[in-house]
Length: 231
Picture 1 (cartoon, rainbow, N blue to C red):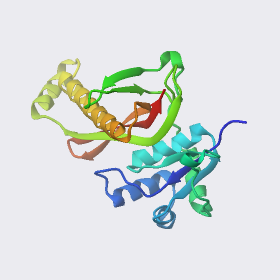
Picture 2: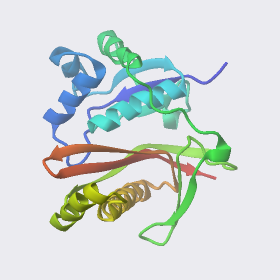
Picture 3: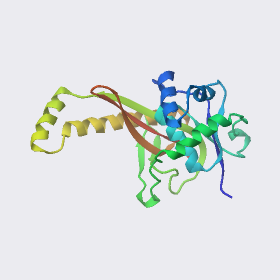
Picture 4: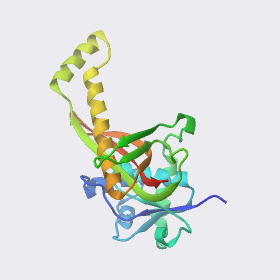
């Protein structure tokens, strides 16, 4: 029998995110109302989804991350130092969250042969493994720390906009925007890695990127993954 998991939400919001914005995003993502959202923010752990497989649990975690909130995945029947969440009668919240399964699912995990495993140096000189799959090939997960993230908001540059207008006439790569995106990705990654380092992790798995428009001419680039310790 495969392992089963419980998705736990404790009301934790990511730094720089407002509670109102997070609640609005969760309400839209979970297809619920103000009453359903209020049940998630009761000041104590809420079991959003119980007795589910790891893939489904991680989809819930990604939904909460995209909204700007942290949620944890607890393995059912885990040892005491990784105790599962306390029982919850909040079946309504679970039912609302289950409706997310009707939304488009995140891309499936790539085969190990196609997985990207990257080693980088942290601010204190240590090593951090970064991968876009849920495990590190050849290593086992010894400890699970939860979701980590990093973000940056960048605005357009008037010079880049001028060159973009010219390229629209003659065609070609918008190199100014390409460089801007590369710098944004790196800064978001660096902040995510620093958060994982402070937790004591030496690897981040299931790394993903997302973007969103926050103002006219400005966009947020967001990197997130699961911090673990591998051995």
